[in-house]
Length: 348
Image (cartoon, rainbow, N blue to C red; front, side, top):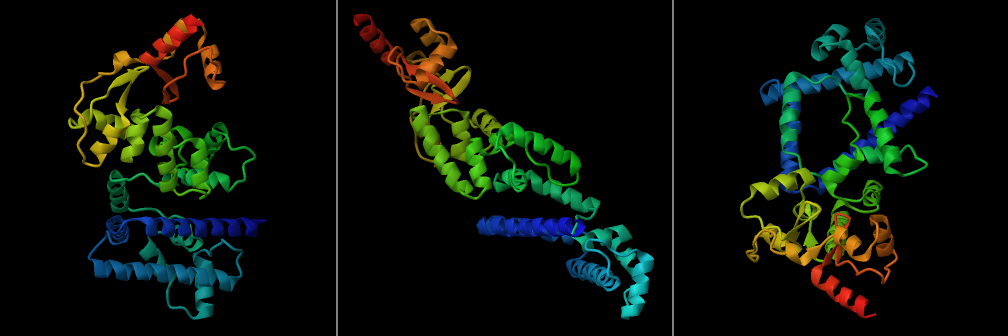
């Protein structure tokens, strides 16, 4: 059983390496170079690069020596020798690299043993600072679904959001030193995808680019040509939080044309034109507010509760005017269409 656990861990780490290489290959040259600079700085933080590379190679020699000693001693997979065990194996094998030298290079025997097992080793203060700086420039990508992929590998019986969030919370407590598995709300904020689409990306049934293209097309069709903050985020490739700040900070951003349940709504084509650096019409803020009505108006007009209204919408009942579209799951109607429907309804 212990050997099976070690083998599973080895396979998981191999898949993680393959995922990293796959993601690296999908980056632009500029982003690949930025990643290279971070990785290079991570290893070469402690001195001139030639000396740092030499020290890195010496550390690798230590790891190989400890692994060789473990194999010679016949230790179970994943178990590394202690200092005295290593010294005994070293003498039997005729290796020159002593335990004292290994400890000096790795600062602690436990660290070289973790490296030999393929585990994460303790970062130095400069390395932690470098990674914090690098994370300051963080583009969204498939790293957001890494936790979902890890969860899917456990073969969950159900693919519900609540089940994943419960697993993520327990997993993050069990593995506090590893990058956290993001909760559904955070993933949705970052990627702008539905949970179903997120699952498909995690399974690699869809690439992230394909999922965003499908999402963009569906949002535009469903909204009737308008964009909520969610639409802005998808068009510009931002998180919802970034999109919220961006639309308020950029004075050149198009004016919103109405609000729906307190949320700003823009013309989709205006947002796309601005993103592409193309001209777009100059508008007044809220210029369409009087042309749009929300569900509260329709419930009063038709004498329905909100639940009854949503049920009527889902079955496309002729007893209510047909919505012009949905924005962030909220239906809306154009006032002119509602007035025409009212006239026809009274005449009937």
